[in-house]
Image 1 (cartoon, one colour):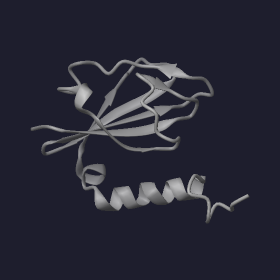
Image 2: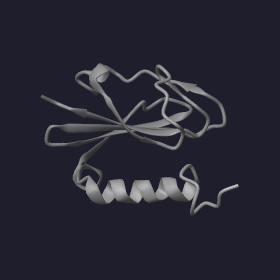
Image 3: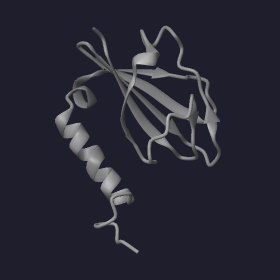
Image 4: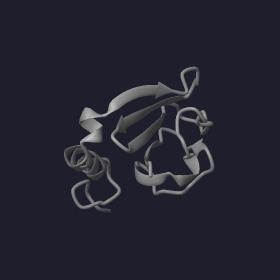
Length: 110
């Protein structure tokens, strides 16, 4: 069994990826912040916007799967999203988050 330092899927390695992402991506520091999915009982969701980029961050705060729909007024073309990072191996689950899943998508406007 690999330790957290050696295991690429450990919580430690995930946090290292998050720290690197924050350092490399000014949108995470300077982007405008808008909460979405305001009334969702399981998911905390928000968008960061900076220049022509939008990042959608979704966090399932429960121990059960959670379904969601991104409101059309929040993102111009949700179908053109690009996966950035998740705490699970990435699988596009068609608007479903696994228990305690955190995922980030990026959308670049043309």
